[in-house]
Length: 310
View 1 (tube, helix red, strand yellow):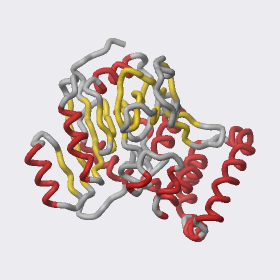
View 2 (spheres, one colour):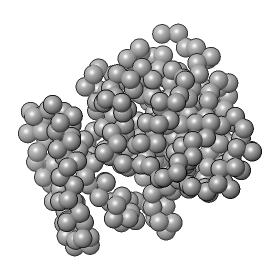
View 3 (cartoon, one colour):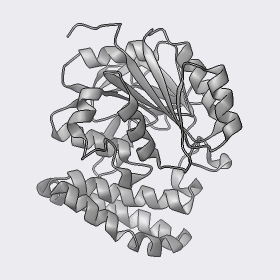
């Protein structure tokens, strides 16, 4: 396919922490790719801040919510409002290198079935790898290639990947339309976490592919919108999550498996799944026993996942 530099890219930012948004927007304004729209789904409920954004960034399409909606619901709202053939979903704690969009966009023209493109996502120290592509692990969890390693150029080779990290997830709009469930692109039952693996798995099942472009670089404050301040950019994320987010982290892995795994592959990977669950639930039994009751009260989500599969 021939690469075209005049493609409109819709950039959707979910805003939850006012400390990060302006840096994110400034990095977008510095992009070498000339044609894009910026859509912000504002969950801050701060009229003074939203007015500041409108004043300083008049080109932005701002959708302020009267009630806080989930991350997945915010993305769905933004995608429905978008006009571009390509959609870049950004966390507000991400800063893009000025050539990110131009370089990443090329990945979609490698193959007409490339529906997802990942750049190299580094942590805020600009030395540590956050993700060089999303993969499905033997444990049926999300695996970020290179996660936590120092960037020494070991992931410079471009190539096919399973999916893309949700912090800076670049999608072909046609793929999103193909994999959506009813009116939703991202499953609203997920709220937060694993939505990127779920949509990648759904896409792979329909013949879509992911591609990695190492030259497209972004910088992510890992946990900036989800963790307590002392947990930012640190490993073992679950230690710094609220009970609600921790519950999503556990629940959504099961939802992803229920919705996407074949029966044969489930049996083949069952020993790995059990091993992973042993460590996860041991941690909960020791440190967060209160989550057990909350998890059991979420049976409705699993019924919904089975219905979506059928």
